Length: 103
Image (cartoon, rainbow, N blue to C red; front, side, top):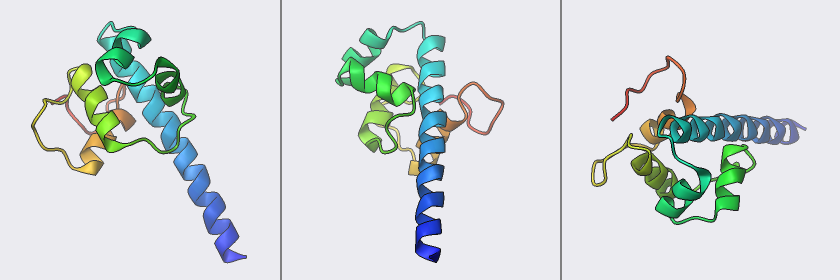
């Protein structure tokens, strides 16, 4: 019983986090005056996948994709090092007064 509850909570958390990351991507893309097509071209992903990311429909996204998005919208310089938490924070707090400053 405890395992089922824990899984449900984890899945719900991942879905909520995916929605926040998606909103962060949208915020940063809009702040950069960039179209979906332009960002997807710069990152090297399909535009439909980017749309799913922005809508929060992809609970798991590869770190390299987030890094490329951060680079494309100008909040992360290629070659600089970010921890997983700091990279995730860029998207989780985009458009808020939350922790990270633009890099």
